[in-house]
Length: 184
Image 1 (cartoon, rainbow, N blue to C red):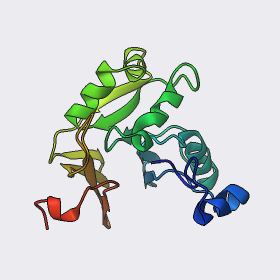
Image 2: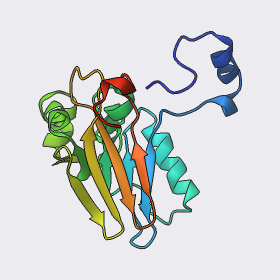
Image 3: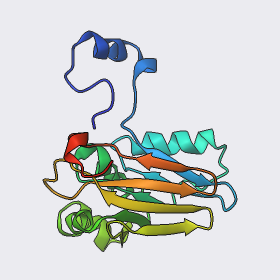
Image 4: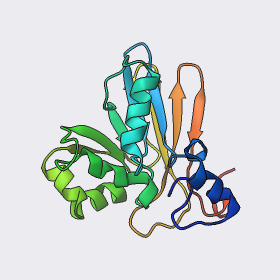
């Protein structure tokens, strides 16, 4: 959730990254693109979102618009949603960015500051996703949601299967233990 190196870490693994910026790593996020429609979706709004959006824009040569067509969130731990604050009026002042979340995460964003201000000012628009549902994004991309056993202090924890016309991708960032899950 904190990227690499971790704050306050003075072990050899982190010292290498403190001393050489090439060894630093962002908090994990994932972009899904549809080259046919030039649409794209971001999975996780990390604390590194401004760098990640800029890198995506540069990597794609500006072929896709700067902001994603939607953001999917897994849960309410700092590395997964706090980047949404960058979309607010203190930074980007975005308008109507779709945020796909399971019900408890949606409620968390709608009822807790500063996130509720993003909703009220329509910087973001909550797109509730039901557990075990499939969200069609384009004719080539569908996203299936499910829950994952993890510390759910503020919201449930989502996992996603991204279905494309050619492959399926499993996106699970945090899970307590595989043997706590009732799935094979």
